[in-house]
Length: 505
Image (tube, rainbow, N blue to C red; front, side, top):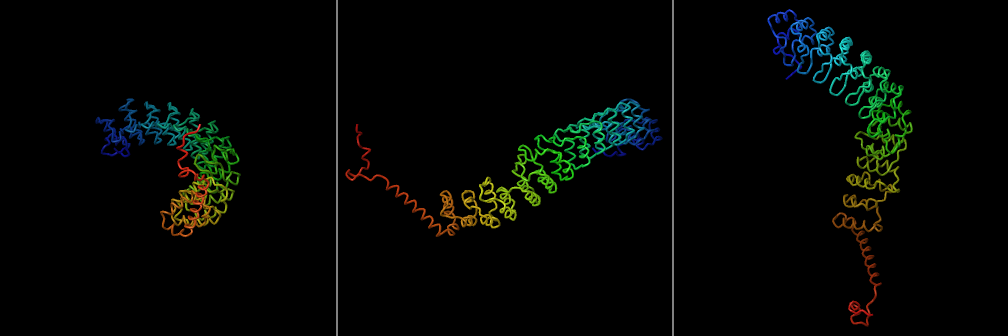
């Protein structure tokens, strides 16, 4: 059923007269004995129509006809009584008549909305004062989530209403179901005047929502620089961790969201333990994650490390590694990190292969030590195998830069997974006579099943294999020559004789 529109065909004649404010017709209808409590398709009765449409005389006549408490408090299908409707429209006189007739100032709708909340929402301070005079609960909830009138006033930035609510006992530390206070709301939505009033009233500037976010954190995240300035001047703590894992600070929020001016305010006041602490996360990661080049440069200019610490939260060993995971163009981020001295290693080369950034791969080759022991060889070879179809764009550069091809050939995944062309190309940079036996075995097995590999390696590999065979035979002969010779004086030599002799005592 549609409750958004009243149809004349479903509205009683009394209700229609009240809606239109036609006192003459209403009087005639009531003299004829027409009912005042016939509801339309929304559950609206004539009293609701009169209250909503500010039909003062009609309302008075209806109440004169039926002044019972039940009629005054009767609700629509959505739980609105006449007082809710009058207050929502800011009708002061209607509100006064209903309250004096016994309407409940704390009645709630199906969503637990009170008349007081509706008065705040509509910004009608005179109606609000009237409700407070008649006992409206200043701390009553608006909805099942716990958001109340002071939250709403703070959200709307209505300074006069905030002051009135506080004067009448509103709890400045009231929380909704998410642990959010009115001061937090002001910081979140950039309501500077609301924030100032609540701070002046003594509201907790370092309050934390259930997820541990603080007003300073949310203001930094949303980019409300004036609110950030006000909070910092009032003593907000920039080192109060704002998540369950105890690593996220307001400086992280500003860096990730790209609020450079706020970052400038927070950097001098934030403890640097977050930069390289083993259980923390550097805001450099936040800037990289958000793709915020200007914020990244600001952090690095102020002494934050381009390498930071290993980030267990996101699963990256360095900001450079995180940069490769971004879907957007990350070259600017990478260049900034390198500009400030970020250290390159084979894992970054691996990521270049993974994302087919071959020009960057060649650039990185000049800065990565290929002779030092690698700690991420497995990851590198894994991505190298996946990038084999475009090996001409990176493998020659890698091998010509001095990379030992034996590192690849010692890997069974490389020997067994790459194409013949790739394997042949790798072998051309190798000294076949110095291949370790396990590598020989793998390549020989691969050659047995690859005609192309046999054709390419043909004569050279044949000579090589013959040499290996001769070495094996020679070793065998030497081993045999060292065994004792049979005794010719015994029949048939000494074959089996020692085993058949009786033991001597």
